[in-house]
Structure formats: structure tokens, C-alpha cells
Image (tube, rainbow, N blue to C red; front, side, top):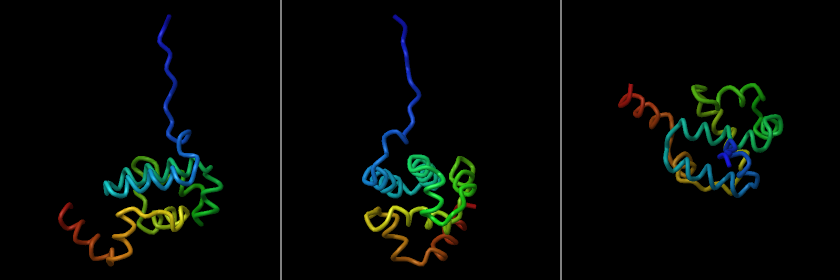
Length: 114
């Protein structure tokens, strides 16, 4: 008897809207940009990149390139992608975006971490 393993792929476990928003909420609370991009990539793959592109008003190419490791998505791109998940998304990160002017916050953060 040999050991058999299958490759784990999160997109198989985030098919529902609730699972997608819950996962993104958790990642937004962490505040790590790479994790946020990875979570959006997982959601886009779970929904289908073409469908996600239509819903987010981003090109399929943009989705496939910028949310992968090293893709470096802009805040505008992230905002469009997160908007797809609608008002049911209530993460700490989204609440912060609504309360503060991100330009100043982002510039301060960039100055502290060159």
C-alpha cells in the first residue's frame, strides 16, 4: 500500500459567495498585500477568469497577470476586484478604505518602508 496524495487547490473550496467573502475578509484583516492579491486570484479562478473579468470591469489578461505572485496590482485594480463581492464584504480592510484617504496613508507607509 503506497501513499497517495492529491494536489490541494483552494478554488475547489470557495465556490460559494460566502466562502469567497469570508476568505477575503480574513486576508484583509491580515493586511498583507501579497495575501490580498493571492486571495483575489483564488476567487477569480473559482468564478472563472472570464466571468470575473466581466464582473469587475477588468480585462482577463489583467486578472491573470496582476493577481499572481509578483504581479503588483494597483489599488484601483484591487478595488475593482473587491467590488465584485458586493456589500456583503465587511472586512476591516474595507472599512479602513472607506474611512481614510488612502493616498496619504499609502504615502506614509511607503516612506516608512522604502
